[in-house]
Length: 543
Image (cartoon, rainbow, N blue to C red):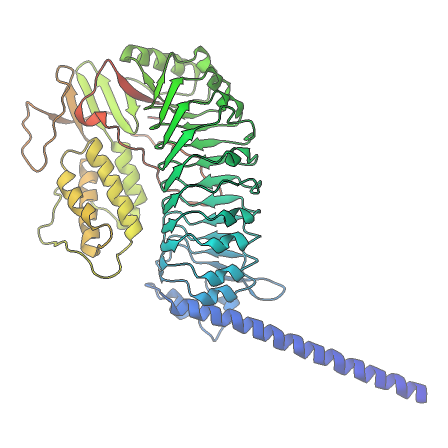
């Protein structure tokens, strides 16, 4: 009897202990959940939501796990993901976001966030994916990113982040994708990248980087995309550039100040599809080893001081679609075009060529320049503006003045103006005055500037099939702005052609659905003359 009573007491104590433990766990869980709630409420208070989706849906009467854009993990019911891309949100990231200790995924792409990234985000030790692209974040590049040891995907592209890259970035050894293009990052690159052996995608184009490329970058054996287009990088490219880059698919180094020869070792990248080295100071001959790249689709080597004959074995490049090289004269160009069209996938060449983004229709009467495809790309990129055709450039009732408050979509506006400047310099002789006026306000714009930009886009949409024509007897092309154009000086007529969709000069990243159109730089010689004896020609097999 006493033994039974003793066992009963033991069972009662165990039951009470279990209940106490369960109660403690519930209290602890509630406390940690409260941290998540407080952090998200602080985030909500720091932003404005034009659509009022968060204002209505993010209510304390429901669990945060049921809020739009929030995903919780199954085990702890803690916030694991914030996904709010393309929602028009405006504001800053509050320090309290660093309290979301279970956060794995943060995606705020394509909104209007601004300000610095809070240092408290260093506490997000579980973070694997951070995508803040297409916003207006500014300030120095965050040095604490290297402390996020589980980080695999990093995208800050198309922001206003400045300063130099910290050496601590390579501490995030799990990184697979780094996308920092189109910012204001300056200075030399860190010398040691050898720890990032998982890195597959590296894009730092359209910044202000200078100095040589660190040799350790060419030892990242997993690297597939290598992009530093449009910086001021200099120095020589390694002669055996591909020895440790067996997976490389895209090499984008155009618009820099590299010198020396095109590396003969480029033939050692068997998977290479895109080779873009245009607008540098490279010299020497086109290496014959380039013929080994049987997967090559796009080659841009001009303008440089690369000379000599085109390698005879270039016909081995059966997948070649676009070729941009310098040739001595049009006779050699047409021979090359005919030869490659018979050997590779370059098709529909006809009598037309592409000079770094400008379509040229060549016939016995002269030359016709058009940018139908380019204007379509601009309009497609800005389709949310709902551009309508219009016949005049200006609305006299719209007044432009400096905006004293926060600019409206500054990054996108700068991109749109850049696209219009490209068209202004390369072909459209009737828009320089209008574009130059709008270009003054890239940092202090208001809604009237967007309305004026929309009007210019509407004018381009209406006139995109009107092209510049000049005959073979007069090689001087003169433009007039807001003036009558003498018919005997310059002719504008419609070219007859079939517009076709063009494939971009880059490989798409599978982690993101939408890619911006990469616009090629304007060819300076097009403004003044086209010399039939010496031209920089890009053969476009898709146009």
